[in-house]
Amino acid sequence: MLIRAKGPHDAAECLELLLEVHRQDHYPLHITAEQVPEFLDSGHEAAAWVAEHDGRIVGHVALHTPDAYPTLELAGAQTGIPVGGLALLARLFVAPSMRRTGLGRRLLRHAADHAPALGRRAVLDVGMQLTTAVALYESEGWVRVGELHLPLDPDTMLDLWVYVSP
Image 1 (cartoon, rainbow, N blue to C red):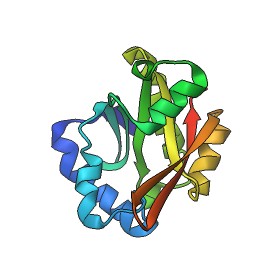
Image 2: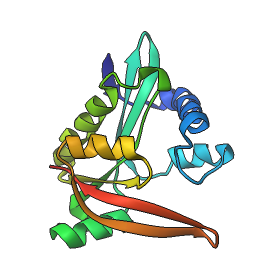
Image 3: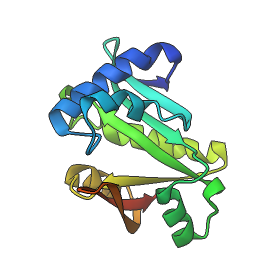
Image 4: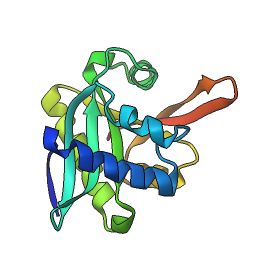
């Protein structure tokens, strides 16, 4: 399994993989398949990596550095680290066929280990109902520092746990 920097030529294959994940797991939460391309290309990516297996992309993770973001603001308030000293670990997804292989754990570690090279500490948010992901983060020593409840529209609330890297 190779983890390497994501390049512009990887965009179509990453989108195809995320659409597969969305069909199976409904991640990203509360969006339609038509909204997945915009979700993947948020414009805040400071660094990103893909995992390859047999010449195909089977995983993705990124570090985002938006100027303002509720997760970063909450993590900053809880840790005393300014928002500019934090990076959002985001867009972590693994091909359904590669689940339970340790790939998600490897991608999580890879991105978190890279955050200091950007002069930042990694933080993340996760849907409260995504218990498998929550278990992964907690088993890796990530510390839950709070929760967010973000209204997406009048009928939909995004309920998130916020974690800070060890």
